[in-house]
Length: 308
Image (cartoon, rainbow, N blue to C red; front, side, top):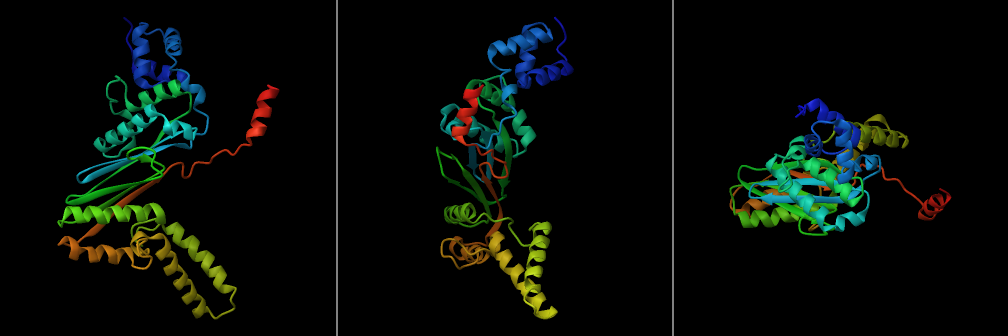
């Protein structure tokens, strides 16, 4: 039997777009003959995925999973919202979220993790789904939160199934206090994050480029007032403080009452839980954010198809 080298597997992947494990299996089935392996994959419907790789995938699902002091969130994209209601796709996203938790949220490790019951890795199973369902799909991102002592709470907005939906949030609270009360607070904070969409946890974490961009806008606007330089500087400083209150989680007004700072809500929680509380981190994945979606006129699309 011919040796199945890594280079041969790589070449077959490049020719067909099929998953690594599928390519390795195909080459094994045909004693390493590259062209026969291509045909084998075509017969199994697995090389069809390559034809779909250029299509925009901005729909799909976000999945979250929590267990004790750890939580993970993933985003798996597809081309249409319809796929998000497919049971097989939902199972894939939920399973991938659990595997992401075991992989520490690392994308490469998650994609390479063994997918249960298939003999394929996660990326290979996704390639198989592309061929089966008929849409381009991608494992876009994954991440994890953990605390040494405390809770990780999740919230899913626009939920389509348990822990699956359009906006997935994780919130980490570090504390030795009452876990049930911590969990209740963390749930509320997760809902706040889903709604308020903060850019950072603290002022120090805020992207410096965002600050300078805002400063430039505020400076130009204040200069148009015709006021003196020191007044303009104060106007800019005031505008930056307002900006921070809008985009920094700990500076934002808590959505539950619309006035109390999130930082104060967390500090005050110490009295209820019986120990100091620290908001250790958060994750917010909104489905398709940052992906340029192609807007098409359906009637024009049909007309174009008729001309072919």
